[in-house]
Image (cartoon, rainbow, N blue to C red; front, side):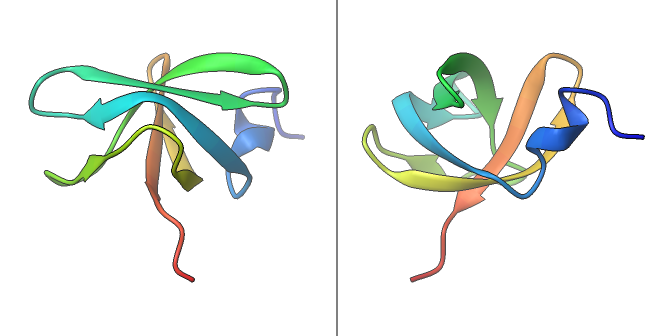
Length: 68
């Protein structure tokens, strides 16, 4: 069974603070809750972007831009 956090993988989230892993910033909102977020690479994702949750590392969600 998936835990609450693991159940977020594959869901969409809205970026509420610019996600910039190199700068250590990034927050997203999913299911009414705010989470810290980062990318696997060096991508910078702007506020208001819809992202996909690809994984979890500690207390941070690993996100990527949703392909249109």
